[in-house]
Length: 193
Image 1 (cartoon, one colour):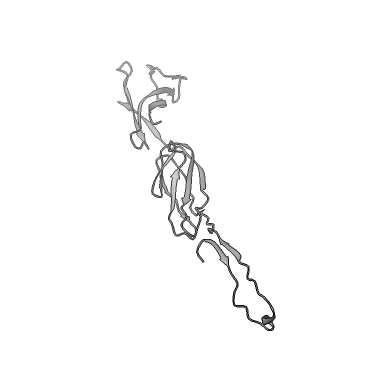
Image 2 (cartoon, rainbow, N blue to C red):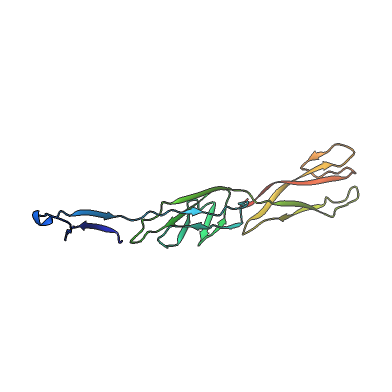
């Protein structure tokens, strides 16, 4: 039952009338090769999003060796054991492998490919003070980001003022006329954005 090449040699023939024959035995051959094995990835990430993780699960063949995983796209996803971390956005490809042994050949590599989406980031404008009298100093604008991870940061952005009723106003310059205004942040710059 072990892998290898074998001669099959007949001998000690029994039967009727064999004494009348000069028997020659000719060996046959038997070759037992490595059995094949295959991998099936049985998990799928729900919503692969930047900063999230996913545990990849797979079944392998009869060698009993562990199925191992590697990333073919390190700028988008990395692995530690079977835990995938989404470190970028775009296409992530995880490869599953299983070594062979003395009875089984190595399994054919199986890839799993999916798209990693951008993580939601909300930037809220903060106006201090939120209310001023006509002619007072222009309020200070700042912002509060919600959703940043790792060492990602917002270092600057553009504030646009739009009128909330009354005279039409739409500018990146702070208004001076009496009125109610929306201050909308946009064009965020920073690291990891």
